Image 1 (tube, rainbow, N blue to C red):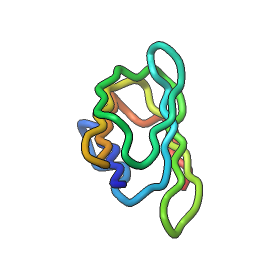
Image 2: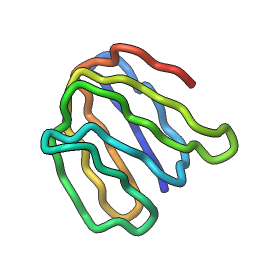
Image 3: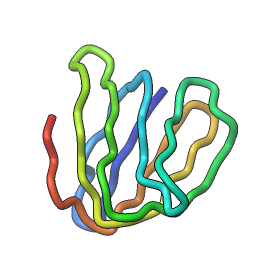
Image 4: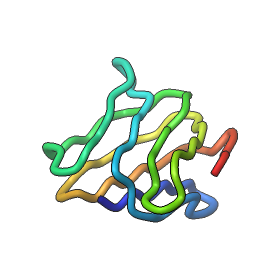
Length: 85
């Protein structure tokens, strides 16, 4: 599935992932292939994803919104605090 992490300044990440974990406002949650459609607010915390071909990576955001639809995940983050790829 495709994951895009975007801030107002730049595109932080775009690529294929097998799973992604998000810091949801009501607790963390994981998205896998063929997940049901979803829109959720995000709090400050890490997004951890398993990128196809390059392994596990983590990006810490300062809140935002995530949309999951048809095996595409779009994260609109307020800002990225720390990125480790």
